Image 1 (tube, rainbow, N blue to C red):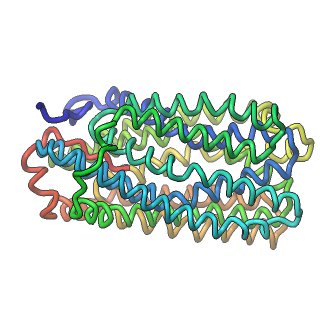
Image 2: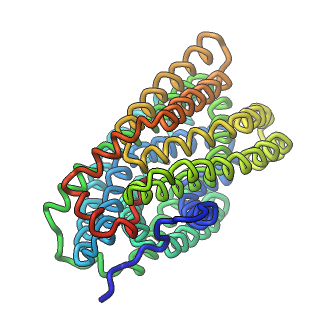
Image 3: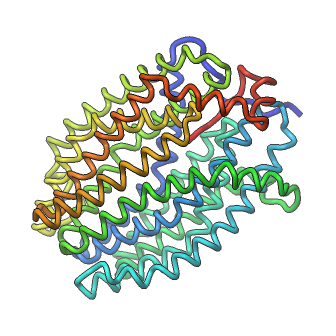
Length: 464
């Protein structure tokens, strides 16, 4: 049996083509969770501001509780990529099965945490109806946790083998199914936010089912390696902590905005959904740049890092300029897709204009962070991401929104400041070469060195 081959080997020529080739399947796969929540928001938008606010806060909290497990499971991708590069094909199935079994354990823990936290969310709203709706939405949506985390494990491990197309097809199938499910349960049966949550559960089950059919061998019993599980935990927990704390800062901001009223939170949710959908291509581009610089670092070709970063920034800034123009010209029409409430429409249109304003800065933020991760500078990236997020977003949201009376606009000013400050720190780190020592430490670790020596020109280290 031939060892699994990376889909895109390290590049030694122009990098623009590889960046585009790697980006678009990742972008479509990343659409899954964001599009599902956006569809939920669109369908429940006709139920009033309380329903929009409940889905907005409930979706954010549900995702936030999943982030630690998601980050931890990404370590399986790193390990499989190294095994492919070291021609250790017999280790691939063991690592994948171990990662999948670990996702079941993490599902149980996350489900218990969700059930415990859900009743507390009612306190975020002054309106009793919104409080009841958010609790129902989170509890029903919790049934999707095992499907989501098992699908995450299968997707990450498949991408490590260079298979990004089939996971993309699974995500497309899930999102296409989510639309008629929402139409039937939310509008047809008039189940409101409960119907929207059920539609999400069914769509996540379809996503997992498609991936499971693609990788049936990984679902079989046997082949679990205790050492592999321990290494996944050791490599993955910093990524999990970073992801959880970063998303938690947005959750904290949502709780602050919730105190301003359901209209403010509904407008915040609409702007957040528009922003998430708009920046997905930028995030995918950043992940592709991370893969390429990781390959260059593994092959000890650090002179290739700067051209990769320049190409990623050029593509990203071009896209952001176009996107900013579209959002600026169409902010009212876009807001009208989500709500027919007059007050929510006006405020969400204003926030969409703010989203257009920080698109160029987000290119520097996303590419800088992903490239530093790909180069192995994980500690600096984690500390900067978490530190700046908590110092700027909820703090300025409380100061500007509550004490100065700017409301939800003050919260989004905090987001803008976070993006600006963090992007400056990331690019300064890249320009001064502070990441070089971290990369040397990574290559010097006994667990990585044999793999890099054995196949320095073939290893695909997918650092995400």
